[in-house]
Image: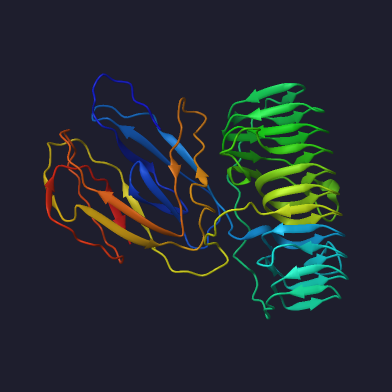
Amino acid sequence: NVTLQGADDEPLRYQIVEPPQHGFLLGLAPALTYVPNTGYAGPDSFIYRAWDGQAYSSSATVHLTVRLAKYAVFAEAGVAFEQNSAVVRGDVGVNTTSSGPFLRNNVEASFSQNAQMQDPNSRVLADSIVVENKALIYNPSYNELTGKGTVNGTRTTPLVLPLRAGSPALPAIAAGTQAVTVNGNQTLAAGSYGALTVGNNATLVLSGGLYQFAGWNVSQGAKIHFAAPSEVRIAGVVAMSQNAFVGPAPGATAVDANQIVLYVAGASSQGGNFPAAVSVAQNAALNAYVVAPNGLITLQQNANATGIFIGKWFLAAQNAKVARPAESAVAGADIENAGPESAEIAPEPAATPPLTVTLAPADITSRLYLPMVTVDAVNDVVAAPDAAVPEQVAPQIVVSEDVTVTQPVTSTTAVTPALTTTITTTIATTIATTVTELIYLPLITED
C-alpha cells in the first residue's frame, strides 16, 4: 500500500509507472494479477504509484519471483544423491547433456545405494541416469538408464534436451560495502550490505523486503530467521556451518520456503571442478527458493533442505534430505499450454470533468487460461517493497492456473478522469443488464 497524507476524502487510483518485463498485469488496480510470459522463470518487477485526484505518491516497486513448477532440484549439468539420501517430494531435472566433469558415475543423474525418491508422483529427467543397488526412483525420462536399483512408475524415452532454454535468470545485484557481523541477537531491515557473518549460536532476524549482500557466512549453530517474505540477492557465496539454520522465524506462520528467495551469483574456486555456490553443512537446515546457476549446491551429511534448489550442479551427501514445499498443484515451465500473448495497463490520463458511461454488464466475468509458467502457488508472491521508499507495503499478487477475474461496476460521486478502455480479447464475456453509472477504469489492453 502507498499512503497519501491529505485532508480530502478522494478515493485513490493507481498508475503503473513501469510494467513488468517478463509478464503482464491483468485486472483493476489495486487488485492486479501478474501473469508471466510463457516459459519464463526468474525475477521480475513493476513500479506503481497512487493518486488521490490532487497529488501523486512516491513510486513503489513490487519484486516478483516466477518459480519453476514441480521441481525440488533443477541442475544445468548434473545431480548426485549419495547413500541413504532422499528426495522427499518434487521432481529432479538435469537440463542438458553434459560433457563433464560429472559428479558421480559419468552420468548426469546418479542415485547411490539406498538413495530414495519417496513420492510416487515425482519424476527424474536427465540424459543418463544410474540407479545403484537398493536405490529407488520414480517416473524417469531419459536417453540412457542403468543400474541394479528399483525403477517404478512410467518410463519415458527418448528425452529431448534441453528441458528448458536455460536456468532461471539472476537479477541485478548491487551489494553494499558495510559488513554486518552478528554475535548475539539482532534484527536487520531491508537494504544493501557488504559481507554478512552470523557468529556461533547467534540469531539474525530479517524483517522482510529486498536485501543485497556481498556474501553469507552462517556459523555453527547460528540462525537466520525471516519474519516476513523476503528476497535476498547475494553477489558471492553462501556457507552454512554445522547445525546452522536458515528459514522462517518462530511464529511467522505466513512465511515458508516459498516466500524466502535467495539469488546467489558467486561460485568459490575452492570447489575445484565444481565451484561451490551454496554449502549446507552437517545437520544444518535451509528453507528457501534458491537460484545459484554458477556453481554447486551441496547438502552435506544429514543436512535438510526444503524449497526449490537450482544450480549448475546439485549434490546430496549421505542421509541428506531435500523436499519441495507442500502446496496445491499449479502449472509450471515444464509443461506446454496456451495462454494470452500480452496485456498491459497504461498510465492514467490527466484529470478531466466527470464522465458518465453506459456499460453492459453489471459484472464482467472473464476466464483466463494462463501460461504454464506461474508463480508457484496462489498468494505465493508477496511483494517486497523498495527499500528506498519509506512506509511501503507492496500489494499481494495472486496467481493461479485458471483465474476468474470479476470486475463489478459500482457508483461513485467523486470526480474522475476521462478514461478510455480498449479491450481486445479472445476470452468469453458474459453480458448482463445495461447499467448507466459513473465509474473508474484504467486503460487496459488484453490480447
